[in-house]
Length: 344
Figure (tube, rainbow, N blue to C red):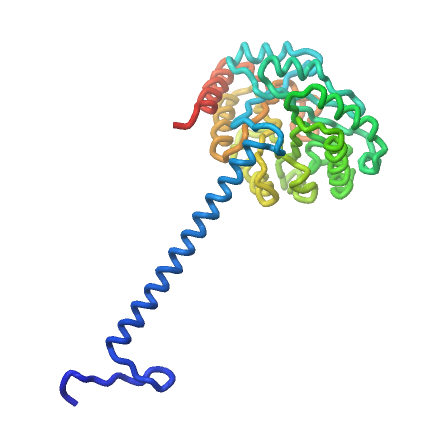
């Protein structure tokens, strides 16, 4: 057949199609594919923006009580909470004034309001690690210690300033009576929720609750902390404890797996709540790595354990974690200056 008219093979379904209509169909299909790609990209961008906005809003109003700082550089030194002198010495030797000062509180010990006032005068927030050593967490969950908890909550409320409280830290480790192998995760969760509930019932709205876990360590049989998670409505911040015990440790290898596990549970702000490196050779490099890691992972900051550890025999032994060498103190000072510098 000659001329401009040309027949095409029958289309599926027994119909025939002209070249012009085929081109129109192809253009419509291409247009639909482009629209779908645009929609997917737009949705992804909206999701990322929403998550970022949510994190930002959360960081500005932890538990809806008071603005959270953009960063925390904290310290623990021997002698706390009885004396603030060690913190003053740390500030003088490093040139960095801590914004967070931590101490450990045994069960049935009262809230150290005098220490909290000292910290506030130095523009620092007190962080209290409440340790229920030798106490039945089931009894705590059942309300047997509510008189003590109400008294503690009243004292914190009367202080009035921001306080960070942590209960039963490193529970996924095995060296504390409230931890793994000694107390079940379900019992820990019940006790944690009860403690938080009592404080809220007493109107202690100046408390931010820090759920503090140990770094995951398969060789030491320290599991993921997921089973001990009490739920987002009972936690304001997450703390992770871990030390540069071995020369090969980096921030990513030490903290990375635990950060990933925590992020599967919550987007709450993360603080390295206890860390250090031996003051033997290489400490300054570990300090620099710590600052770089906290910034790279977008964490709140860290608390340096500037003391000789006697209570961590399980993993760390009697290590001296103090920043005693001039090079290490200089590395800390440089890291702090860069960490606190506003983004351009």
